[in-house]
Image 1 (cartoon, rainbow, N blue to C red):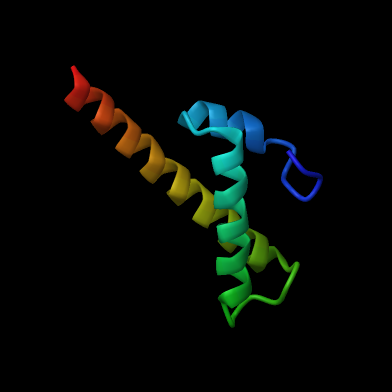
Image 2: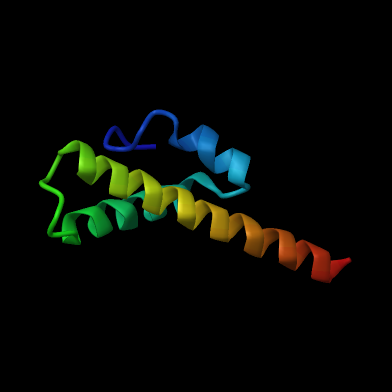
Amino acid sequence: MGQSYPMILPWVARKAGVRDDKAEALWMEALSDASDNKGAAPESPEYWEIAVNHLRASLACRGRARDQSMTLRH
């Protein structure tokens, strides 16, 4: 993982059953979402809160989708 990613990202990704490269892409989407938010100044606590919340929601969706596809296979 690159230096611009949170150090905990690989661990969080594994817990959600998401590959590291996909987690990196989700993190970049989360940062983009935070940047698009007019109420949060770049690098402010609100900016990071939006980014982390976006990442958590994305990982949760990926985890649910993975669980559903595994259930359908069985």
